[in-house]
Length: 244
Image (cartoon, rainbow, N blue to C red; front, top):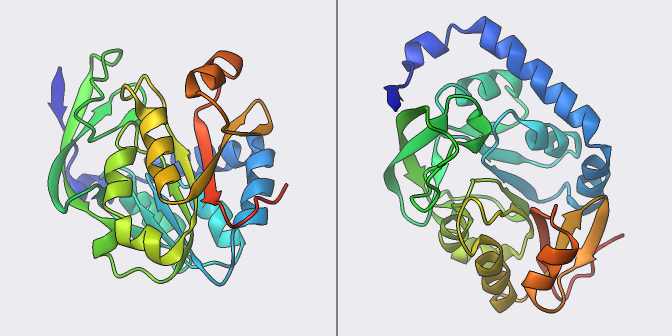
C-alpha cells in the first residue's frame, strides 16, 4: 500500500519531529563510540566529507567535529529540512537523492522504518508492506562542483553502485576514503559489485564487523560465512595504508 507523503509546508512546522530526530541522533552517536574513533582517524580536516544518505545526521555530526567541510545529501522531505536546522552554519544539507544520472526518482519509505527508504528498483522492500512514496530530485556527485573530497560515506539501501558510477570523476580526482553500507537483502550481489568496482579503481577493502576491521581477502562468500554481521565496508586507495 502506498500513501502520499506529507507536504513540505507541513514538515517545516514539525517541532515534535525535530525534537525526536535530535534525540535519536544523539543516542545513536553515543552507542557507536568505535565508529567515532575510526572517523576521527580517517578524516582530513583540509578535505571535504560527503554523506550520501544522511538520515538523522549521525555521520554529519561526526564529520563536523573534525573541522572538515561537510556536504550531506538526504532526499526524504521529512528529514532534510530538519537536518538543515540541526546543522545550520556547520554543514550543507542538500535535499536530493544521489544516483548515476541527474533527474527525478521515486523514494519509497517504509512507514515503520524510514531508515530503509530507497530509490533502488532492485530493492523490493518485501518485508515492508506499508510504504509512503515521494517524488525526489536526483543528482550525481560529479555534477555537484564539490571541493576536494577526503571521505565519502554511502548508505542508500541498495543503490550504492549507482552512487559510485555517478562519482567516477570525483573518485579518480580525489581518491577519497569510502565507507559503504552494502547488504544482499537490499540488492542481490550488492557486496561483490561494490568490492569489485572499487578494486578496479585501485581501492583496498575492509569489512567492519563485531568491532573488528577485517581485510577483504579471498572469496567474498567466505567472508559472509565467517562474519555474517558485516554490512559496513571501508575502502582506501591501495597506495594509502589504513591507520589502525
